[in-house]
Length: 247
Image (tube, rainbow, N blue to C red; front, side):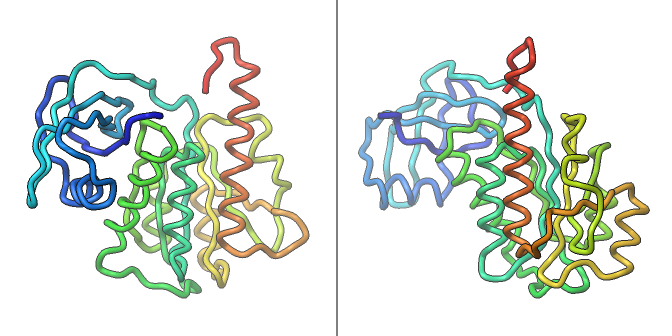
């Protein structure tokens, strides 16, 4: 069985470090590991290191990184996903799935018709959910995650050259976003109430092309998960066809 994995952004070979309070709590109170336990530390920058638990105290857990670990090259495919802020923990769920599916940048936004406004801790909650997913799925690169901002600001910050948005009133067929397949893509899905007319206009001004996802009206979280899954499928197809065998 693979050793239990913990997250520490500052992890480096041979380093001694104290786990964050949340990671220390998980090791000590949930998993009930003991001093001397062999674990792994992932830093979210493509590296994982074998480590040993050196000291467990009520207010601190210290570990020693034992040596060189496994490295993973930077992602060959980049997806910048713009997610709406949704009620009921659904945005947190989508962040988790984005990590599992290999998304590289996550921008969360709220629009005119959105039903949820950003709370004080939403940014930290989204990052915590992403870290949990990273440890669980075995990925070594933590996506860039940005706290919720107005849609206009999220669009201004978007960097991918090829960009589309899911539009319930119709648009280009879904295949246009993936044929030819771009290795640097941005996709946007609107909130529960859809995009306001001025938001649709702004999306097009920023170079985002409307996509139809078929004849049925999908819930926002369904549309997000569907688009991320289709993108991941195309990365696997493209990697299989590539002489370099990219993943």
